[in-house]
Length: 105
Image 1 (spheres, rainbow, N blue to C red):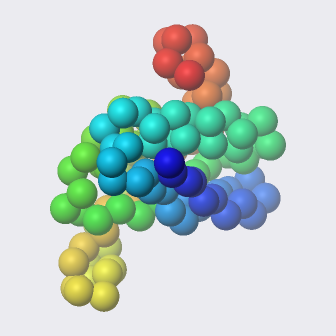
Image 2 (image 1 turned 30 degrees about the vertical axis):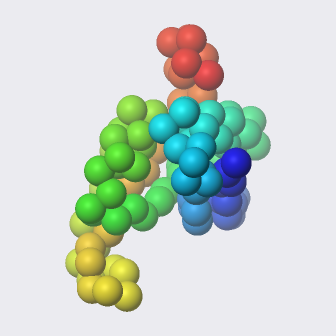
Protein backbone atom coordinates (compact mmCIF):
# COMPACT_ATOMS: atom_id res chain seq x y z
CA UNK A 1 0.00 0.00 0.00
CA UNK A 2 2.75 2.45 0.91
CA UNK A 3 6.10 3.08 2.50
CA UNK A 4 8.05 5.61 4.54
CA UNK A 5 11.86 5.80 4.39
CA UNK A 6 13.82 7.76 6.97
CA UNK A 7 17.55 8.16 7.51
CA UNK A 8 18.67 8.53 11.15
CA UNK A 9 21.92 10.12 12.31
CA UNK A 10 22.13 10.44 16.07
CA UNK A 11 19.48 12.88 17.24
CA UNK A 12 18.54 13.99 13.72
CA UNK A 13 16.57 12.25 10.99
CA UNK A 14 15.66 12.99 7.39
CA UNK A 15 12.49 11.82 5.66
CA UNK A 16 13.78 10.46 2.38
CA UNK A 17 10.51 9.35 0.84
CA UNK A 18 6.90 8.58 1.66
CA UNK A 19 4.44 7.24 -0.88
CA UNK A 20 1.12 5.45 -1.14
CA UNK A 21 -0.07 3.42 -4.13
CA UNK A 22 -2.33 5.64 -6.23
CA UNK A 23 -5.58 3.66 -5.77
CA UNK A 24 -5.07 3.73 -1.97
CA UNK A 25 -4.52 7.48 -1.64
CA UNK A 26 -6.79 9.79 0.33
CA UNK A 27 -7.58 7.04 2.85
CA UNK A 28 -5.27 8.27 5.64
CA UNK A 29 -2.49 5.77 4.95
CA UNK A 30 0.26 8.39 4.63
CA UNK A 31 -0.92 9.96 7.89
CA UNK A 32 -0.71 6.63 9.71
CA UNK A 33 2.70 5.83 8.21
CA UNK A 34 4.10 9.19 9.23
CA UNK A 35 2.59 9.12 12.74
CA UNK A 36 4.06 5.67 13.36
CA UNK A 37 7.42 6.89 12.07
CA UNK A 38 7.30 9.94 14.37
CA UNK A 39 6.56 7.70 17.36
CA UNK A 40 9.42 5.35 16.41
CA UNK A 41 11.89 8.22 16.06
CA UNK A 42 10.83 9.75 19.35
CA UNK A 43 11.25 6.38 21.11
CA UNK A 44 14.80 6.26 19.73
CA UNK A 45 15.69 9.72 21.08
CA UNK A 46 15.68 11.46 17.72
CA UNK A 47 15.04 15.15 18.34
CA UNK A 48 14.38 16.56 14.85
CA UNK A 49 13.03 15.27 11.58
CA UNK A 50 13.67 17.22 8.37
CA UNK A 51 12.21 16.79 4.89
CA UNK A 52 12.02 18.43 1.50
CA UNK A 53 8.76 18.54 -0.45
CA UNK A 54 7.90 20.09 -3.77
CA UNK A 55 6.58 23.60 -3.19
CA UNK A 56 3.79 22.63 -5.63
CA UNK A 57 2.65 19.60 -3.57
CA UNK A 58 -0.07 21.30 -1.55
CA UNK A 59 -1.60 18.03 -0.28
CA UNK A 60 1.70 16.80 1.18
CA UNK A 61 2.46 20.20 2.69
CA UNK A 62 -0.99 20.22 4.33
CA UNK A 63 -0.32 16.76 5.80
CA UNK A 64 3.03 17.82 7.22
CA UNK A 65 1.59 21.01 8.71
CA UNK A 66 -1.30 19.03 10.25
CA UNK A 67 1.22 16.76 11.98
CA UNK A 68 3.22 19.65 13.44
CA UNK A 69 5.94 20.32 10.87
CA UNK A 70 6.97 23.93 10.31
CA UNK A 71 8.34 25.55 7.19
CA UNK A 72 12.07 26.23 7.48
CA UNK A 73 13.04 27.55 4.04
CA UNK A 74 12.39 27.43 0.31
CA UNK A 75 15.15 25.94 -1.83
CA UNK A 76 15.03 27.26 -5.37
CA UNK A 77 15.93 24.91 -8.26
CA UNK A 78 15.97 21.87 -5.94
CA UNK A 79 14.50 19.38 -8.39
CA UNK A 80 15.94 18.39 -11.77
CA UNK A 81 13.13 20.25 -13.58
CA UNK A 82 14.21 23.45 -11.82
CA UNK A 83 11.26 23.60 -9.43
CA UNK A 84 11.56 24.66 -5.81
CA UNK A 85 11.34 22.57 -2.65
CA UNK A 86 10.09 23.55 0.74
CA UNK A 87 12.29 22.34 3.60
CA UNK A 88 10.26 21.48 6.68
CA UNK A 89 11.11 20.25 10.16
CA UNK A 90 9.48 18.96 13.31
CA UNK A 91 10.84 18.96 16.85
CA UNK A 92 10.20 15.40 18.00
CA UNK A 93 10.64 15.94 21.70
CA UNK A 94 7.10 15.12 22.74
CA UNK A 95 5.61 15.30 19.22
CA UNK A 96 4.21 11.74 19.20
CA UNK A 97 3.01 12.17 22.78
CA UNK A 98 1.08 15.30 21.73
CA UNK A 99 -0.57 13.37 18.89
CA UNK A 100 -1.57 10.60 21.32
CA UNK A 101 -2.99 13.14 23.77
CA UNK A 102 -5.10 14.57 20.93
CA UNK A 103 -6.24 10.99 20.23
CA UNK A 104 -4.75 11.20 16.76
CA UNK A 105 -2.17 8.41 16.84
